[in-house]
Image 1 (spheres, rainbow, N blue to C red):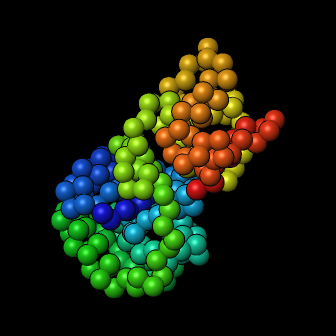
Image 2: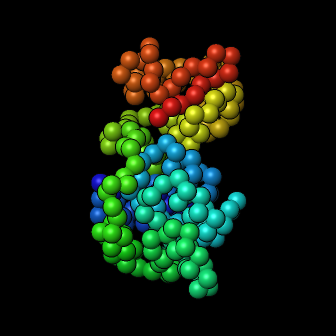
Length: 221
C-alpha cells in the first residue's frame, strides 16, 4: 500500500482520486486546509504528498516550504495556476514535480511512479500506527481498518488532527456531529473507554489516549 496525503479544497477532485487511486493500492487521505494537512503529517506516516496551490489559510507554495522543513517525503504540486514562477518557486521550495491541471488521473499515476523511483528510502520517516482517511471516514491502525461507531470515529479523528494537545470533554463533544447537544460530557468518557479497548494493548495503562486530570484527554501517536 502507498499512503498519500492530498491537500486540495476541490471535493470533486478528491472524490474522483480517492476512488481511482484505490485501484492502484494507493490510499489517499484528502484534507482541504493547510492546517489539517500539517496536523496529519504530525500524526500519520505518508509516502507521498499531493499539494494544490490555491488554498484557504495559506498559499500552497508557503505550505510546500513548511512541509519540506518538516520532512523529506516526496511532494507533487498539482495546480491550475499557469504562472511559470509558481512552478519555479515550487521546485525551489522542495517540490519533486509539478503537474498542471486539468490532467488525466493516469498521468498522476505515472508521475507518482516517476517520483518514487527517484525517492531515497534512506530518508523514510518512522512508521506511525494510525492513518486517517477523511474522504472515506476510515481510520487504519497498523494497516487495518478499525471498526468504529460514528462517535468513536469523530473523537479519534479529532485526536489525530490535534496530536499532543490536551482536548477538553466540551471540545470533543462540540466537534463531533454524532454526539447530540443533550448528551452529557460524561458521554465522552464512555467513548474514550471504548476506543481504548480497540487500540490499546493495556487499556488501564494507555499508550495513546492519556487522561489529563481536570482538563480532558491528550493523544500521543
